[in-house]
Image (spheres, rainbow, N blue to C red):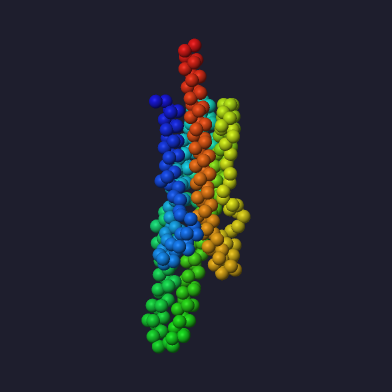
Length: 273
């Protein structure tokens, strides 16, 4: 088996691995309204942290796909100097603007700790240090302490959501650039299928268009509705990206297989001649 055939098999395996990395949630409305209340909103919490897990898995597989794609193009064009000339991978921090992968249990532990501080600790403090306070004063004290602790907890959660939206948009930009570079390097192949591949952007978040601070302000101004809106976009836009990325990578894989067959046939014809 040649190196080219080996790389094509790797690409196909990574393409098929989408079923393991690009987890698709049920409809957002169904999950939020119909599953949220019966599970005491445990399902939306699960979806929040599952977003982090699938982001890491999706990035890792996409990065590996681009690495093998670079090597395959080099073999097809017989030009080693074109190696790693497609979109930057997410390994070298000097060329990678994306945030490092975050394990889901890190924010989960911090969020759980924040929940304990903001909901349970104020009550314990009020009960222990203010046992003689009137009921109204005790309640006011719990609310005051709870809100002071709840604010940084929510800001941290929001920063995760903001980071996920930003990372997906940046990865989509890199994929679009990768497709363009692939077309340029194989422009002399005459493969019409490859030339006709196009990538339809799915992530409406523009890198640098908004800061996390603006998102937080909007959440306060909309009395929390913007939080729900961002959660909706985070779930829906990622799934649209998964579908579009799968379509584009599948078409690239088929075009490369066709080019590999043509290259093999040409080589055999030259040897027979």
